Length: 83
Image (cartoon, rainbow, N blue to C red; front, side, top):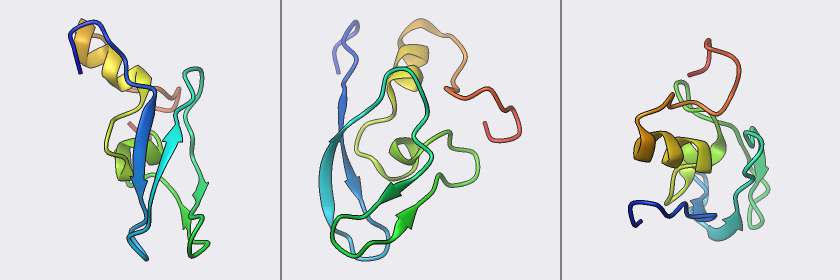
């Protein structure tokens, strides 16, 4: 990731079957759920993570990437109970 570049794709790895799938990340919302295309497991963010990409992806979500680049708030959701 270059200094001013936000990655929009992340490889999700299912914790149940280890299937890998590259997905496009939303830029305007947290993705709370993801159904594995191989085994059907429903992925949810781990405690402390804002979305499935931050928990199971090869690249953190765009709002977190932006915060890392700018020193801003490292959370893409409105609930401070999660982040």
